[in-house]
Length: 120
Image 1 (tube, rainbow, N blue to C red):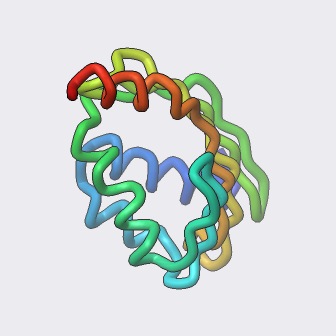
Image 2 (image 1 turned 45 degrees about the horizontal axis):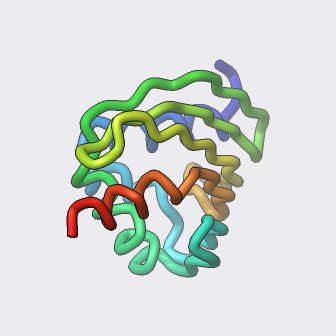
């Protein structure tokens, strides 16, 4: 675990999966860019608005794999949320000076959309 990027990515992951979202946001750069299934998210405020609701409905998370080097880390994990029991995801992040500046976030939106439809 000598990878600086992996250390930051794991600290961020541990914070948000532990429901300490404020601590998680300390690892996010003010000018973060995130490419997610819903589209591009720019800036820490927009990122907070994107991730906050997900963290609020998180039940648990389990890391499947984690790799990194000086600047880039990849985490693959499975999550359980209130509406969706199995929601795997993956993030490839770029880290500069201990902050995540870019995130390529991959997850399947279909189960969440189905859960929303079933709840109405």
